[in-house]
Image (cartoon, rainbow, N blue to C red; front, side):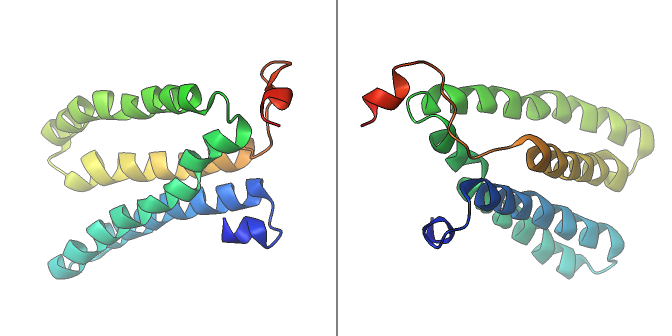
Length: 142
């Protein structure tokens, strides 16, 4: 919110924060893949996952920006779609691990794919501009 108060557009702030939230874990996971140092991987993985908290200033704040009246419903919808990779991903990861015997291929590569594709989709289609979902929304907020 400090960036928004300084004049940076809401859309730029939300996209930047969400990009940090996705690219930081992707970079840390890539570091785990490329490193032979187990201690480094022990620090990189939690660091990357901790940096996902930038999504609180990205995607999770965005619902309130685009429609304060329906923010709860929008959050519920994004959580439904956000939980699907967990539902599908766990058995898929097990299947990949059984067939490849590689944690890199079964865990890290799919995660990297979803982080990078998530950044692309959010930066291409995300917005912080208010949506008018009904005619009474603007008058009820005044």
